[in-house]
Length: 243
Image (cartoon, rainbow, N blue to C red; front, side):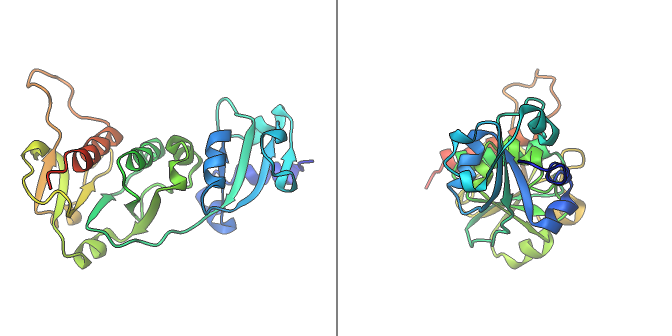
């Protein structure tokens, strides 16, 4: 049986400070929970209206739909809510990195994580002031991909200066990415915040800037959504490999 204190505790995990303090976060929905169960994340407790969907009775608490609605961060709760232990990932050395500078929108980060897995990126580096990847909205938008893509928070300027590979920024004023002629397998690709783009200090470290071209000049749309832009660049880097 779930207690009132447990219900209150789970709701508090919506706050970053509570997640950090308790080293725990929430995953909702059968598919996403199973993705995390298949990874190296550790389940602390599962709250479910249908415990028979999982063979985890020793860690499962059966709850009513009304109780699930109290603790869920979704508009339409999906039978199961899991509390998992946070894992802080270590950076893996690579010749190609995706960096996100001051990303604030949790839906965008979640979608970027999902796209990163699709295009074969195993890790993303975020500035320390970016949205927490264990935010419930990020977890939900990633659709389980967070269990397989590592998100590492770094001082981006220090990281860039320590790497000895080219640094490319993204900007709608940049050259078309179709004009990119350097080694596609080596480089740091930086994407800025939704509202302000790449910060000035980091822009100064970029050797050139690239954009995603419109199909023709008559299109009036001013810009693409951030997650769409990142996805298109990642697809270019992986699907149009010229080596």
